[in-house]
Amino acid sequence: MTRGALVLCGSGEFTRAMAEVDRAILADIGSRHVRVAIVPTAAGLEDTPRSWVEMGTAHFASLGAEATGIMVLNRGDAEDPRHSAAIADADWIYFSGGKPGHLIETLSGTAFWSAVLARHRAGAVLAGASAGAMMLGSRTFYFPDGVGAAGVPRRVAVRDALGLLPGILVAPHFDAFPVERWRAWANSWPEGHRMLGIDEDTAIVERADGWIVGGRGRAMVFRSLDDHDVHPTGARFDGIHVVDAART
Image (tube, rainbow, N blue to C red; front, side, top):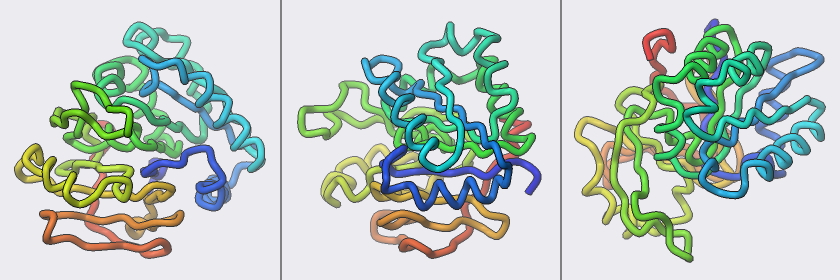
């Protein structure tokens, strides 16, 4: 695999829950001076982007890597050549959580997303947590009416995503919602897609021979809610294919 690995995280980015997973990825990168780009685009409509960068910077410093925030928060930022230049030597590009709809609308078809894909083709790890993972499927859930006080979306709809995982709908925070919620949202499930559920504080990391699950929970591949495979932490699985980034 000449391009970098993909990493999808159900939640817990930049916390102790992901330290072991991230330490192993850094070891795989192998450089003595790993450069990580933290991109908080998904939080661009919130007041938390700098908090995500601060968390990421501290987290990776504790693991011996240097992290820098890339403040691409809207489409204007995503067309600014300075941001594309800022990731030109990144070994790992990490999109943190927030709103998947805003993230996709901000990045789709922009110079910055093209630069991300180019760097990924050149070998950089590309990671997304929560909304950052959701954008990587060919379709994604999004929440047009926002999220209620209990953290539950008021309404769930589906839209095109950025398409690195064809035929896949990514569902992070999977264990945070009861099965009844997923059954209610199944009406939005696009035809011809499998759903990739990833528990909180859990990640799947692409390897040459498939994917490995890390963290505290599980990854699940659903053909339907009643027909699925469960992969606990430490398990390897395949069947989730990555499209050639040159064609996205």
